[in-house]
Amino acid sequence: EAGVTQSPTHLIKTRGQQATLRCSPISGHTSVYWYQQALGLGLQFLLWYDEGEERNRGNFPPRFSGRQFPNYSSELNVNALELEDSALYLCASSLNNEQFFGPGTRLTVL
Amino acid sequence: GQNIDQPTEMTATEGAIVQINCTYQTSGFNGLFWYQQHAGEAPTFLSYNVLDGLEEKGRFSSFLSRSKGYSYLLLKELQMKDSASYLCAPSSNTGKLIFGQGTTLQVKP
Image 1 (tube, rainbow over the protein chains, first blue to last red):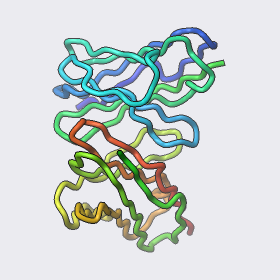
Image 2 (image 1 turned 135 degrees about the vertical axis):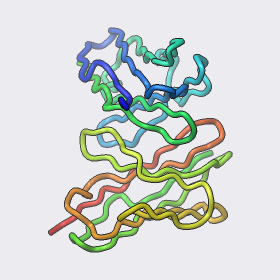
Image 3 (image 1 turned 30 degrees about the vertical axis):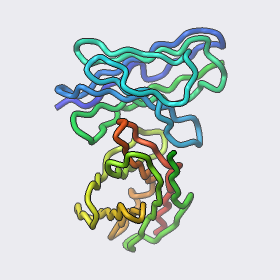
């Protein structure tokens, strides 16, 4: 069974640009979670999607947004990139309570 | 609100036993996850406790006391590959997982 996949693996952008990160959940999982892990810091909850709807979001500004598609894959969009947005962005999918993480997308903002 | 407290760093010897404690305060608590994260990699699931008590899974065991807001992860027969960060993450009925800063465990020969 394929795990959670994320693309791209690495992404380099400059300040003010926009970044789009993608996540495909494990087959049959309807929930997708996004987390940010800045260097040396813990995972910070960003967004939770379930059945195509945004269910909850963490303490991040509105320029962090996303969506979930009918096939349950998800996109995270970060607008007006700032230097401090440089981090590992992790996606996790869940069917019941257990969350399985993808390998992450490392975003670098120059 | 949410608050999670676990030691920042621990060191143990190969073959030994180590216990990583976690205390938490979480609104609408559902259960508690433990994840292992090697440097530069995604977290991998270790355990999920909903009920009070000890759950054993091979060399790893996890304990939960809901009334005390307390959990621990017990690692037996430590191996060098167990050197990693261990993340305590209570889950709430809002669907959120709130992660602690993690405990960095260094296993020495």
